Length: 171
Image 1 (cartoon, rainbow, N blue to C red):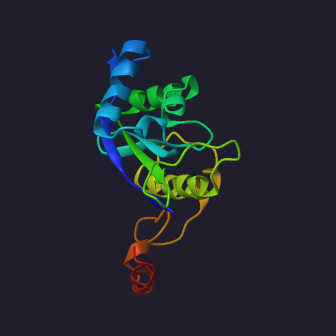
Image 2 (cartoon, rainbow, N blue to C red):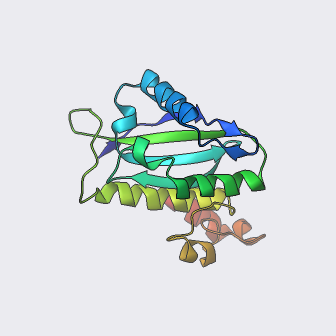
């Protein structure tokens, strides 16, 4: 399964919050389509960023990016993040590609690989930003400690065995 990365697409604000206006949403999706035709109707994963950090990771597997990315409960998550950090909100889109190189379409059954990618992205993003807004599936990731790999505590990464581990797994 192959994915591409598109963005960073700027997200309009209404004061301190993400704009919910139809005009701003239309403008956002027009820019997405100008970048790559059909991208707004694709499925895959998306990442809401502020200042080059992921603040929310989501997936569109049963709906298109256009239907999923600005649902009301997603905007609430984005606004929570904007309450924690100043900066310009942006969106990265990672559409799934078919073997022929076209954008994959959402399905009623979903896509197991999209769910897996979302989990991988959440785990990685959480390592860089403990303030990640995702809650579902993050409890174990937030509590687990693997020196040099996950939630490393101060001083843990210096041990020789931890350095060997990091080289072995490529981190």
